[in-house]
Amino acid sequence: MEQKKIDFLIIGSGIAGLSYALKVAEYGTVYIVTKSNEDESNTKYAQGGIAAVWHDGDSVEKHIQDTLIAGAGLCDEETVKIVVTEGTERVKELIALGATFDKNKDGNYDLAKEGGHSEHRILHYKDITGYEIERALINQIRKHKNITVLDHHYVIDIITQHHLGEVITSHSEHVKCFGAYILNIKTQKIETILSKITVMASGGAGHVYATTTNPTIATGDGIAMVYRAKGRVKDMEFVQFHPTSLYNPGEHPSFLITEAIRGFGAVLKTIDGKEFMHKYDDRLSLAPRDIVARAIDNEMKTRGDDFVFLDCRHLDRKAFIEHFPNIYEKCMKIGIDPFVKMIPVVPAAHYLCGGIMVDKQARSSIKNLYAIGECSCTGLHGANRLASNSLLEAVVFAHRAAQTSIEEIKGITHQEHIPNWDADGTEHAEEMILITQSQKEVQQIMSNYVGIVRSELRLKRAFDRLEILYKENESLYDKTTVTQKLGELRNLICIGYLIIKHAIRRKESVGLHYMAEYKKTELKKATI
Picture 1 (cartoon, helix red, strand yellow):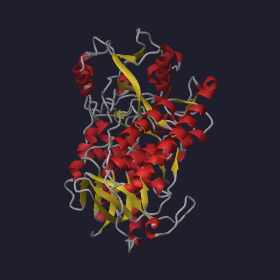
Picture 2 (cartoon, rainbow, N blue to C red; picture 1 turned 90 degrees about the vertical axis):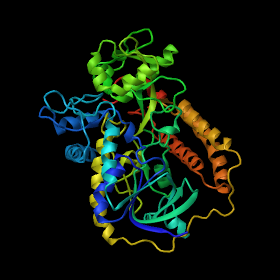
Picture 3 (tube, rainbow, N blue to C red; picture 1 turned 135 degrees about the vertical axis):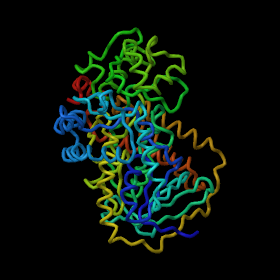
Picture 4 (cartoon, helix red, strand yellow; picture 1 turned 180 degrees about the vertical axis):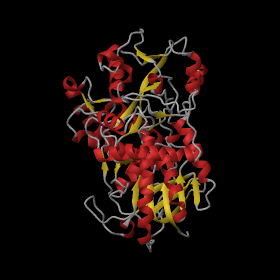
């Protein structure tokens, strides 16, 4: 099969990948690869908004401090300063590209306040901010002659010297990325695409857990393939559980109830209608996400309840519907009028603070390979992401990656003699149940043993169970023709392993990584 040679290969079509594509498109050919539709990403489902210093009452120093406090002392302070300082200009660029954010009657932006923020600084569009940003970016992408979108294409692995027969280890310092092997889902043929620069913008890994707000595509593919290629990953133990997904058994993924609703005045209560957040934090329902999620988890476990309530009954109905039309519509659709009944909510896996380790220009440890967005670990979030900082991080590091790669690509040539994918000796899977059942087992293991609260015993049990699944799946992978589902399972097992491995190493409770052994010293105000 003929190999394609391009300049920039972008894996993923969220805000990070799309922003990067628009910035480098004047400097070469750009391919954006996505395994679903071009607009399907975690960005699309981001309800709350994008945080930025926007008015005179706010300041860069305040936003930096809020981020550092939420990150439990593990943020990279230089990165925090970069993102907050450069972020406002990047948001202005989004507006120039056509993204719309809500304004108040005075014509100023209607800035929201979310948990952990000391000021109103969240720009939003109703409760579908991510969808609106995605719409604006894709509209610009479609107009550009140098950009090709390969939807329904699944990246199996990035190409390195390993595929030329060279032995690569985790200690190798000279690993280079030459492109990727990509499965055309519609034709089931595996294509070889060679690129001068490859950008991993593949999003998160929420589906390593049984309950998640992430779309089904969030299976950690980018992180797993970089780890297999001996790239460095960092902070994988810090998995953020959103405190409030809609409790609606049977629905998957879980519907997100943005914490902007709590910023709007909604109050968390137990099933018997009693407030409880005062027992855990002085900021009550507006405490950082890790504290709120852990408080809810504790209330559910000690009381034996399946959910807690979010009370919106006292809020202004007209203003609520205006700000959160999709949440209102969703609740009404399942028979919950939020002004008559309280909304049942439960924590769900939402965001991965760790990922592919990158420098201040988004360069990974593998040469010619960048990582941006949720799949990367820039050091911004530390042990816990501050609400609405993720979209900001994505556009800031997409910009930095673009600036650097535009310069670096001048000295890069395509690698010669790359072999095509070898599927000889493999057969199509006879029983799909081997894949689907293993995926359910991974998700149950992670949810039950590596969730909001962990212990050394649970982590050891999870590691042992996952090791069995790993061996079974590698045996299946070696003899089976690669499909998207098989590849995703392989990646989910890898992600589970990395989360457990990093959690075992960190023998303390900090931020999102909460160990039962350290409960007495860490339960209250864990991130202060």
